[in-house]
Image (cartoon, rainbow, N blue to C red; front, side, top):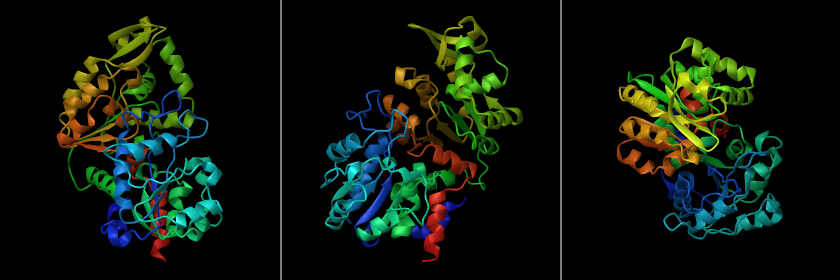
Length: 415
């Protein structure tokens, strides 16, 4: 999908003329949440820091109404945005000037909120609570979506879609924007889209590889990715691939994988990749049995630890992957290699050995892992890139469509 060229006329190139206020902005400040339901305010997530500075920039030209989400219903991460508001408004370096009082969910789409929006002044920013509290957020219909009439009546003059990390979802808060007012693609999203399309440009002949880790890979995207770049695996993704290759990972790991990967369609997609393509998998692991941690356990030895769980890849894997990946001109890192939240960080050693021009780290938990190990700045200093988007970039590289961008192009082409 060549979205970059199609979106040229919707790029923010002159903020003083394009941001006619009040401006409705959709951003993605969805960040990892601790067990207590709070976010880490002592070390703000890169998404919060980046979008904090961007909102501060936008607000200098127009009053802002900001929509954002956090987590999904039924999950621990589904919480209110009070902590996000406090981080955005008080962070010393990224403080937003004139950050207005937080809008609680009870005030959504009310006459009081409409009056507040109409009375906003240039430089003021109004953050709405977790937009996923609204039931119709994930069921967009331009004929019935209440955002459209409400924000029109509230006086919204401009919209900015700066939520690339959720472009692969047809959420109402991005789909409705071009129906409300003139809509532009935000500066951060346009930048990341440029990096994305530049990396996978079919006209180049550069060698490409992606390291897919984490718990739940983009099953639908993996077969398409495998046709465009070489695959290396880590995390639970790697263990499921090994299981499909007939490897015995030990009783506890086998049971865990049976529980996590129980959707036939997803397993069929992954099995198709394993059958058709060469997929690199770990040679050894770090495992934990109770309080005991065993390092660099070879794959063949795992059945000897029936009660142990895999927590990370071992150093033999890191050395093997490092040597192989250094030969690629483009190297993508998507998803943690181990349980970094518990201090299993061998994946950070892999990053240190393959950073440089052509290295791209893809958002979500990957960025959080990199921040925990203070690697974001070194990556950028070495000529690499850290993207805030996660699954959206994988879908983009796979060539899958972005619903909200297709909606923007369709609606504003005819207005």
